[in-house]
Image (cartoon, rainbow, N blue to C red; front, top):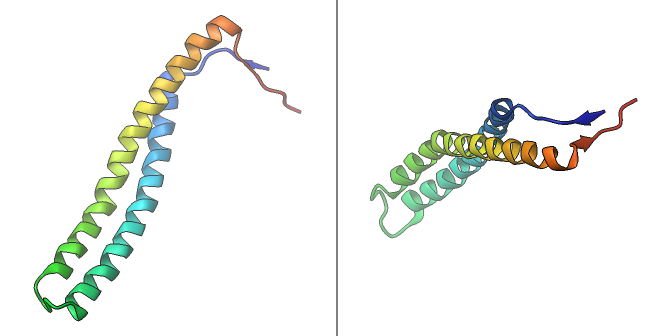
Length: 101
């Protein structure tokens, strides 16, 4: 079986979904790190109760929202470009050969 052409928009959608999933994972990691640092800053720092903890906690919440959006957009654009370039290259070399059973 030879893959001669890839649907550009369908590849872009898949790239966007995968990118958003990775963005969510990274956003949760940033949320956890910012939360721990925020609690430490508000509890143990020299500026006890200065609002640094709330600021870092807010950045953590924003990262859970912003990272999946940014990574999703980047994945969509990346998938779009990769599928487009693959289609051009497959026109020259005949496509990608895949063996199945």
